[in-house]
Image (cartoon, rainbow, N blue to C red):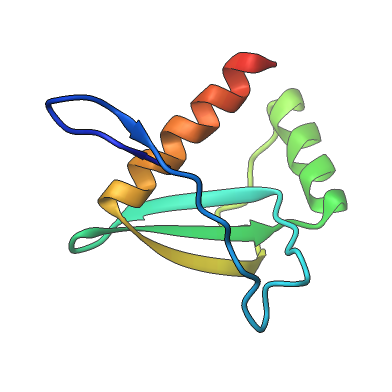
Length: 98
């Protein structure tokens, strides 16, 4: 975690403890982000791989796309704006390394 202020950036190591339901990872193959009041809502979901393949095929062939696609939400997170900004920075750093 990095704390930024006008003087300098300080890095503090945080050791996260597993919560009661955190031991089992959740898998998501898509996400949706929307603003809330003072928070950023991030929904993670799962689309069946066959549905993804069908949508990809329709898009490539120029066929009519369905108006709505059913998916299962695996997790909803409400992040403070600061936490969402930190997450964005961490993801950007991760992808720049690859």
